[in-house]
Length: 78
Image (tube, rainbow, N blue to C red; front, side):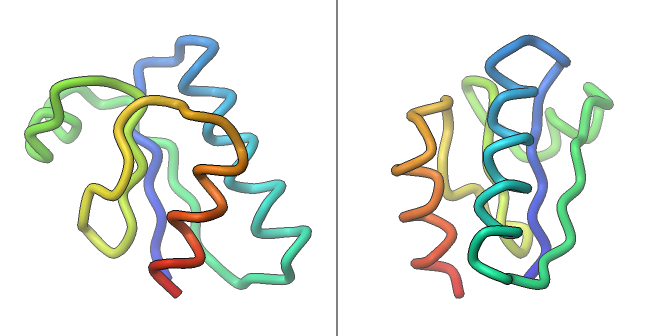
């Protein structure tokens, strides 16, 4: 599974990236996590808010809604 966090470096974006890496480690998931800060790449996903969670090139969550919601979305994508 390939996961991307789209964000500009704000605290909410960094928090989402940290939560994803913690959740993956805690569950023993082997996933690639990339933090995308390049505005051109972010715009290509046509999201209306940040941070955004992208799994296998599909936007699954916009906005940092906490670790519970992040983990739920990741489990749905496994």
